[in-house]
Image 1 (spheres, rainbow, N blue to C red):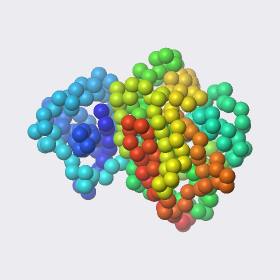
Image 2 (image 1 turned 135 degrees about the vertical axis):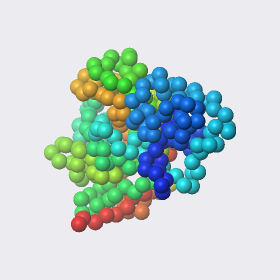
Image 3 (image 1 turned 45 degrees about the vertical axis):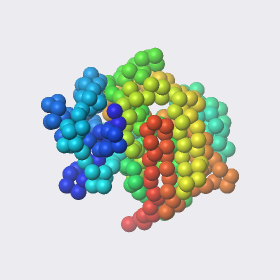
Length: 305
């Protein structure tokens, strides 16, 4: 299923299905087919895999007349991040593509050696914005605003001490995150101020359930800035793949339904260019992952109060 969150002038965030390029309100559809469907994506994840699979079948087999009764006109819907308010911090993975390790070592004084374990940081829920939302650039805080296209994994059930061969059983689905980074805001090696500022986690436009992506380790991902391609790679080049990451993270933390893992970015970030290429107010950044779509945002200047 293609899942999204949206709002209108008369409603707060609601769960929708993107079906035949049309938005179907999930709760309204549930009433029509006599199957209780919640109005938020987190609540849907909480229902469990069996229930979500059943809902997918109902949607696939629905008649046009049923769907027409719960369509939401696209022009009246504002698409949000699939999970507009995560329950916990996003788990970010740094230096997870070989060439990105090399470019970071050249320009960001990180180690040139490949990590032996995943480099983990976090982004708070307040960093999350949706497609077409503005990434806020406070010029008094940073002069080095950068982009990072990433495949994001959404956990579907409680996971603790998971073995890598079982890891994908704990995945609910996938979306896109642009891991916005203020390169000059790192503090004594810590990254959360660099990566966790408000609006620094654009996410979306949809969440694709895992049955739609049989192999998440063979997805093209790319990014353009003002229409010019800056990043282009494939998830097969991850140093630590999704199985590795879930095994590692679940050994340390209890992963819970709705948790989000941003799996790292390939080479091509602005910091890696010579000279560096930073983002500035008015720039348009578009992050694309195969099968999921394109996440588009604009940089907007803000001033300190």
